[in-house]
Length: 69
Image (cartoon, rainbow, N blue to C red; front, side, top):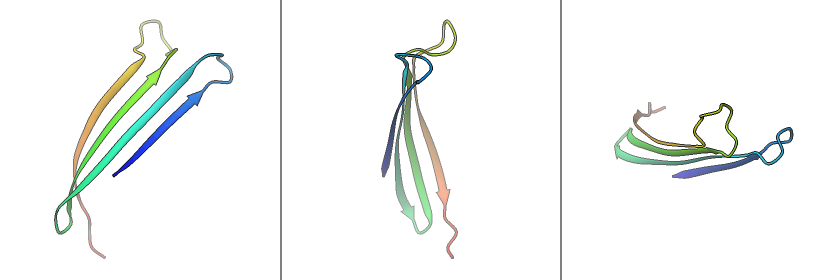
């Protein structure tokens, strides 16, 4: 399990800031198989484009097989 949170400010556009965040979780099912779940979000208080959304989020689901060495 891990998380990453980034807050980014702009030098050239005064007052603009962005946030990117992720939460990753991995469960071991059996010997070398895992279930992966990632939750993410993105925020931009001054997005490029006139009708662009300021907030986005989503879920990514996956299965992983780890080859043993």
